[in-house]
Amino acid sequence: MRRSPTALLPGFVVLLCAVLAAACAGPPRAPVTTVTVRLWDDQVAKAYGTSFAEFERQHPDIRVDLDVVPYTDYFVSLTTQLASGTADDVFWLNSAWFASLADAGALVDVDRVLPGRRRAWVPAAVEQYTRNGALWGVPALTDGRIVTYYNRRMLAEAGVDPAALTWHTDPAEDTFLPAMRKLTVDVHGRTADEPGFDPDRVARYGFNAGRDLQAVYYEFVGSNGGRFQKPDGTFAFAEPRSVQAFRYLVDLINTHHVAPDADDTNVNSDYGRDAFLDQRLAVFQSGTYNLRNVADGAAFEWGVAPMVAGPAGRVSVVNSVIAAGNARSPHPEAVARVLDWIGSEPGADPVGGRGAALPAVIGSQQKFFDYWRERGVETGYFGSLGGTATIEPPLGPKFGTGLRAFDPILGEVFAGRLPVGPGLQQAQDAANAAVAAG
Image (cartoon, rainbow, N blue to C red):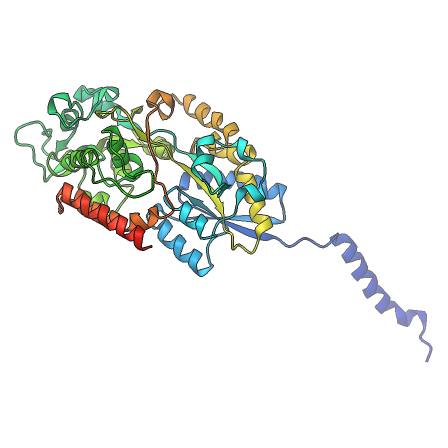
C-alpha cells in the first residue's frame, strides 16, 4: 500500500530531531578518569585545592580527589591498602617508608615516566629518594631546618633570648634548662625555679620535649654528636652520646617538669603545637610544616628563632616529602600527568604562594619566602641562618619495620616507665631484630 507524504511526516520529524540533537551535542565527551591523591597535611591540601582546580581546567579528562589522612594513622593504613590493592593512585611518602616500597615494586619509577625532570627539583630531595639508580617519587615538599617558635610576651617577661639557648649535659654550660624553668608556671603562678612550684598542676610548660622524631629527638641526638643509625641502616641510638641526649629530654619531662607529660604527647603528635597555640607552651620546636598552622592559629605575638643548640652546635634533620605513584594504579597515564603537575611550577606555586609549605620545586620556593617575609616572619632560620650541620634522616628499606618495633618502647622511656639507658638498648635491639627477621 502506498503511503501519502503526510503519513511519513511524523517519522521524518522524529529522525530530524534526533539528528539535530546529536549535532548540537557535539562530539562525544571523553570519559573522565579520577585520580586520588593521599597526603597528611591540611594546609597543603587547601593549596592543592587551588592547584588541582587549574590542573582539571587544563586536563578536563582527569578529576583529582584529595584523601587527607592524619599522620598518626597514615602509614599503618597505607601499607594495609597497598597490600590489598586498594591504595590511592598517588600518595605522599617520607624517607622512613619509601625504600621498602620501592624495593617491593609498589612505586612508579619517575625517571621512566617523567624523563629529564630531575633538574627542576631540590637536589637533596632527589638524592634522598633515589635508590638503585631510580627516583621513586616526585619531590613535593622540603622541610628545611628545624626552628624554634616562641611566644614573644612570655619570653620577654622571663628575660629569655630564644636565639641564645644551648642545652648541655654539664649544668655549668646549660642555658636551656634554666630558661625553661623560668617559663614553666604552675596554677598558682609559681615558676619551676621557685620554691613551692607544683609539678602536678602545671598551667604552662616551657618546651615540647617528647617522642617527636622529626622535630625533637633527632635534633638533640645530632646536637650532642650522636647518631641514630649506622651507614648500613642498622640502629645505633643506644650509643653513649645518643643516650645522653635522650636522657636530657626525658629529664625535662619527668624530673624538671618543664615539658608536657609523655602520656599526652605519645598519643597526640600535635599536642605540643596545640599547647603552644593555646598559650600553654612557651617554646615550640618544629619545622616549616607548622609555620602556617602557627600563623593561622596564634592569637598572640610570636616569633621564629634558630633551633636549640647543643654541645655539637645546631644539628638538624632536613627531610623532604615525595608524591609517589602507585605502580598498581589502573590509570598509569593519568597518574603520570598528575605527578608531572605536582612537580611543576604551576602545580607547586599555590603551595609556596599560600605559605602552606616549602615546595621542593626550585622555581616555586621564592613564593614561599616572599609570602612570609611580607608578613614579617624571618624565614632564614629554615635555611643557612639556622646552621648548616645535619643528621642523616631515616634511611634504609626497613626503617619502617624498625620504627614499628622501637617506637612503643621509646614511648615508655619518655613516660619514665623504663630507665633511659636500658630502655634505649631494648628499643635498639628490638628494632635491629625486627629488621633482621624481615
